[in-house]
Length: 411
Image 1 (cartoon, rainbow, N blue to C red):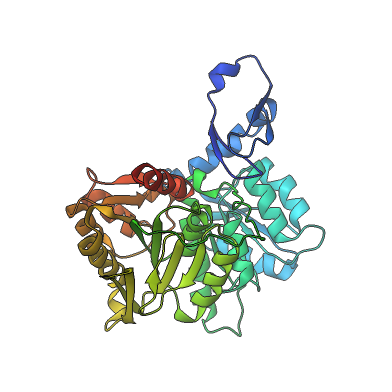
Image 2 (cartoon, rainbow, N blue to C red; image 1 turned 60 degrees about the horizontal axis):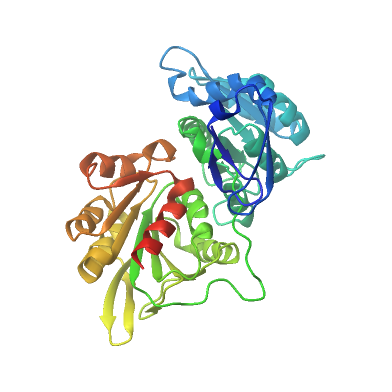
């Protein structure tokens, strides 16, 4: 059984055979030393919920429909969402709740494959509800709220606490017509249902020493290049805040996201991470203990000078072709050789697959997000199929631990 500490998020693999005959197990977290308790009698009662969610990908293949719970304090919005969901032959609304408290009573009794969740609700708001869901009965959750727009702080908070994806509420005044919004809602629910259960466990970022700041710069012996597209906000929120400070490594990230939202995301990551997070800028010195983010509209390459490494950041001549991740990884492979680490995360298309191959060719290390934990599986799936003997598949929740261990072992 896989458990996550509610205090620090550390993963614990528990062999239940060691506790045969016991109904309550007490143990200490190996990282924060918090006293943890597992009530096996309650786990047995929720076994059907967990197994039902894990089998979500089969629902539909054998004629069963995806069960969805809709949580929103607006009766009108619940009806609109219910009509949209029930219009799909592959889905059904299994229950509705008007606030977080109702949702927490409803979800374990129904065992939905997916929940949709509003943020502004009476009695218990959506973010508090989300935390309880992820701790007590992890369920793939799509936030549908007037507050969850790309680049909004509430969106980043929801993704940090375990939401799979987000959408604004359906509206006749938006940029998209109602039919487009309907299709997008159905697609997001279907994609969320296919994400492996492990990837929706609630994790807290590490506590940051506010007095000392987050992550003083160190020497840079290794550079880690990460590339991601659709679903990338959530994946990066699972990784960057958990990267250990003080490691002799820098982190370059290309995120396929609108340029106008990147500054807000960088600021949010910096506030919630133990290392420094900055926008990548041309001729910026690369320092260990820092993470540099660029959009897909920029080509980022690395050059060496007498003081270390510099970033070259230039507008991409063909941003619509999605080549920024490849460009970054190819440059890194040429500059760092076996001291490079390539990380390919969730996303559609195949940007980064060729670049990861170059990192492998120059004896660098290649990590790929396990496609079962990806919202969009194209990039990770293509890389795992092409380089299966030369890569390590890791869930987004485990990726930071693996990176920390690799760099620590090499330094």
